[in-house]
Picture (cartoon, protein in one colour):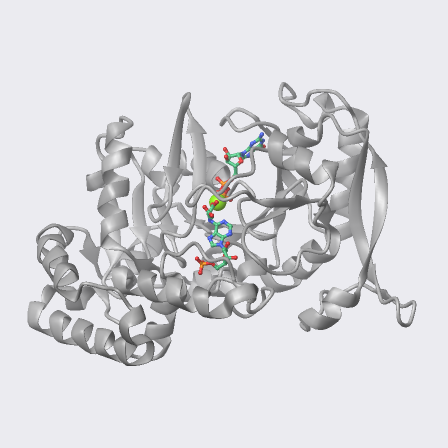
Length: 423
Ligand code: 2SA
Ligand code: GDP
Ligand code: MG
C-alpha cells in the first residue's frame, strides 16, 4: 500500500520529519518530482540530517529509496549528499538507493541558465534556488533534455550536451559563462559510478506494488508551488501535487491508502510571489526567529505570516488529502493571540471571496478576513497526546479541522522524532 506525504502550502512545512517517522516502517521511500532544490531537515536520534535530492527514507537501513522518473537529477549533488550522510554515520546509504533511468539530468548548464533567466526578470524575480530546476524541466518539455540512461553512451551524451549548449549560447551569447568540456569530463567520472544505481523504475515500482511492499512517497516543495496549480509564475517547474506523484512514479492509483497534507501552523514562503497573510511587522519577525525559518538548501530567510485557510481549502481541492499533519504548533506557544485567514474580501464590491483566484493581479487587490483565536501561552513540546495540549491549542487544531473538512491525524510540537502527537 502507498502513503503519500505532500506539502499543502509553499513548502518547508516539515515533510521530512513525517517521512522519517513513517519510513521507519516502510520498505520503499520514493521521490516523484523536483530536484536538489528541495530541503528536508530531519532530527533523528539526536542527529540533524539535511536532504535535498535524496529521500529521507535513507535513515532507515531497511528501506530502499528511489529517485523517480519525474525528478530532475543532479549527479554532483547526488554524490555530495551521499558523502555527507555517510560522514554523519549512515553507512549503508549507497546500498539503499536507486535512480530511475527515465529521470532527466540536471546540469551545471541549467544552473547557469537559471541565474541568467532570473537576472532578466529584474524586479520580478521568481526567487529560485538557482539550482537550474526550471531550465531542466524546460529542456525536458522542449524534448531536447538528456535522460539518465543516455549518459552511458558517451558519444550521444556529448552530442546532446553540445547541442543544448549551442542553443543557449545563441540566446545568451557571452553572458553565458559555462565550461562544456569540464561538464563532459565530470560525466566521464559520474558514468563509472552511476551505473549501479540506475534502474528501470517502472519495473521496480511494479514489482514493489505487486509484492505488497509498504511504500512511502515523500513530496517535495508544495502545492502552492505546483506548475499548474500554484501561484504561477511564482512556482517551481514540476507538478508537486498528487498528479505529479502518480506520473513521476508510474504509481497504481488503486494502491493509494493515505494522502497526508503537511501544514505548518502558520505560513512561510521563500522567494517571490503572492502571500496574502504575510506579516511584515513584529509577529512575522517573531515567527521567523522562533521558527528558525531559513532555507535548508540556500540559507535564505523565509517570509512569514499567519495560517491561510483559504489556501488550505484550495490545496485540498487539488490534492484531496485524507488527513492533515499540522506541524510547528510549538512555534505559536508564546503568542497571546493567533490570527487565521478565513476568507478574502473584494474591496470594490464588498463581496467575500472563498476561493483562491488564478489571477494574481486580482488576488493582489483582495483584503484578508481574519479570525482571531486565543493563544495558549504554554509550552506544548512535552505534550504526547491531544488531551495533553492546552485547551486553546486543541481549539486551534479543531478549528482547522472543521473549517477544511479534513481530519488532523498528526500534530508536530518540536523538531525531534518524538515531538509528534498521533490522533
Ligand atoms: P526553483 O529553484 O525553480 O524550484 O524555485 C522556484 C520557486 O520554488 C521555491 N522553492 C522552494 N520553496 C521552499 N523550500 C524549498 N526548498 C528549500 C528549503 C529552499 C531553500 O527547504 O528551504 O533552501 O531556499 C524550495 N525549493 C524551491 C523557490 O523559493 C521559488 O519560489
Ligand atoms: P520540508 O521541506 O517540508 O521537509 O521542511 P524543512 O525541513 O525545510 O523545514 C521544516 C523545519 O522545521 C525543519 O528544520 C524541521 O526540523 C523543523 N520541524 C518540523 N516539524 C517541527 C515541529 O513540529 N516543531 C518544530 N519546532 N520544528 C519542526
Ligand atoms: Mg524544505
